[in-house]
Length: 389
Ligand code: GLA
Image (cartoon, rainbow, N blue to C red; front, side, top):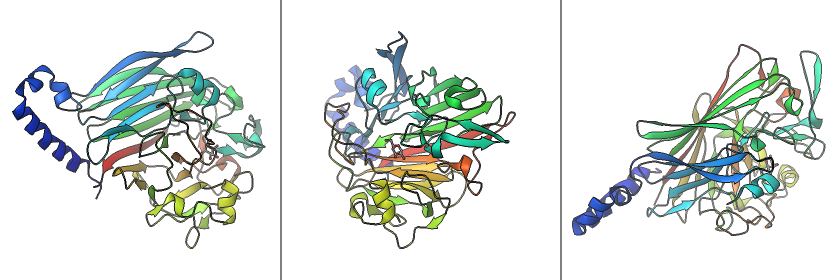
């Protein structure tokens, strides 16, 4: 069983031993001696947008030494530092060390993705008899909210602390018609870093007119540490027995197919690299894994678990959503230089995006993504970190 408790217990033993030898260390710097010290949150300037708007980076710390950085630009998870099985911390999410790269070249690193995460066929959908047109920014299709989606908006940030947790509430009001979507959408995303190494994301939205909404976070992970090689050895397990097969442009055909017997089946923990180059038509179309898994079960449940054998780091994705896009970083091509100064080669990060199914507005048999005035869109996803030895 993954266990951060185990690591903490070991760490505590070491710290007690060190404290006994060097009592002054504890007295001088209790926060450092206790690794994470008290939970806290601080703010710094990160960069300035071309129009002059200033972007902040908030750093959230918990008592077990985990540290998370969030930008007010795109609500981006810029850095996630978690311990390995020896207690050594590394940043496990892909990102940049400067604002300009996020603005100009980010393949959605860590961002809040909306209004509609994933694809809408031909940038078109019909709601209550009216057809809406959206930007086609991914070949013939609409992707991740359009040319200036939620990933490129400036969010208002309100930090808070609650018991052993620290958090950041981000709000953004998307005006009626923005990126072609109907309705003024009032959006709130609350990031909470808990004492047990979880990043909890609570999403809420309301609208002034009927609309469609599908929000997610698009963090790319490499549990070896960002910039530290490929993710092919990560062992992935997804609690899904079905998926939505796609056409050549990665739009669901509308079928909900069984995974059994295909190289897309991750019900048993399997290394991502084992079958990623398979000649299976779906994998060829995705250029690797880039598919929506239809999650088994309902309510807040574990959707996927990833174990990185060398570091012992474990990531569990817990969500109340019906779907999970597993993307194996196929479009990374070695041209982006990440936070730590190293280039990101193909498949050096993966994403597990909790979501409603792609192109739901054009598929009556998929769970609905329609939001009407008076209704509240609410969803929760958790990235839970731990270790195995
Ligand atoms: C999602 C999509 C991928 C790709 C990435 C961003 O995961 O499904 O096809 O567009 O976002 O590069």
